[in-house]
Length: 271
Ligand SMILES: [Zn+2]
Image (cartoon, protein in one colour):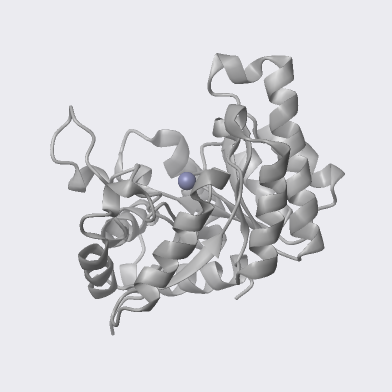
């Protein structure tokens, strides 16, 4: 039996892949990746998401490509009111699986400043409203703001679930997202034995609440990194190594785990 995989979070549209995207897509398919999601972060690149999907749709033997437009909290300084309208137009014109990636990010000190944090909250709130209106799940980006994101999801009585991507919270936070209908997104970070918090989270909550993602071109699994000093480009073809590392962490068979994660991905994206 062959393994089928769903890469629930990629930036496969970015210029890092312009030279060899089709070869990498073919390789990903060969490595079991049947579906991938292209995720938005700034309005300026929305057309690239669509173009990337078109480029891949014309090819045989590549993963099926899904779209999720959204305005990422880390790029908050760049977002303008009209970009929210562009998210809505995108939802109206294209077949989208979700809105993403959206959320809150206070990793940088500057983003904790009241004006910028309020702007992040505003953009997150408006996009949550759009997700309610268009009945779409959301792909959440959360850094150092789990409590705030949970609070806003509850305030909005958000009911369409989605994925808490590249999860960096603890067990209690993971459980709270699961309770609100979310799956927990696991990246190549799981290949790092020192990522103790993440291993504890996945082992405690179990496979039924997890999905896989590469978050390419970032988050390259340890096994695929060429050296310790320079950043190695991650690609959807590396998703199998995320599965491998997660199976090891959970002490289960890759084949069995893949089947559960496959079903979880379809459930999280309401496909
Ligand atoms: Zn991302």
